[in-house]
Length: 221
Image (cartoon, rainbow, N blue to C red; front, side):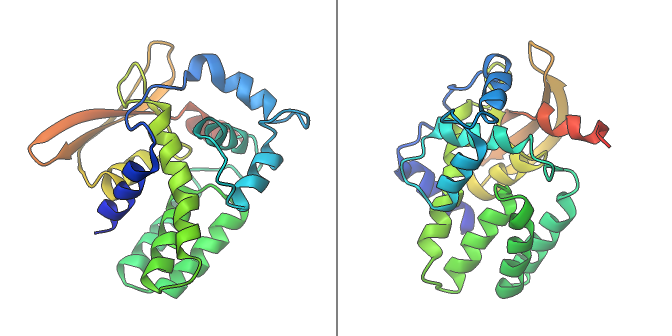
């Protein structure tokens, strides 16, 4: 089962699952400005180059900084990528793995950190026994690990995700849970939260994902 495979990767990576290491209110704007500074370690093009090279020394904090930097890119239009994301998921469901890889590459060209494209490209590579399958999985797991590192899913410490539906994908495909009630709200500082009821067996809990950087794009021309 795909979710169990990727979850095992998270557990074995040493990442602190359900941590609370990132404060959106204090850090987002600072990191965003740093991502534009050519001399800073968080300079977006520099971090993206390391990510594309599958640099194993990238930390979870640097991965969050990379994703924050991506929100300033002209192609960051997360609500416009939801349709191609669904197309990818349908192709994978139909076991059309080569077609899915092609669609993933099309999406990753302008959105190199897209959760679904990275996840399903790695999965397709694995199913087709491609030699680069481990490397593709490692790239995706850096995204997953950084999300897990960023928060514990509570209202006080929500998880940082790049796309508006990434919380759903994380629950379904990584944590292996089902989603009950879906809603929204805000944290103590007024930032928009995607709130999902995650069901794991007989247990359930509310998972909070902080996404004002995504929702703000709906009001941009």
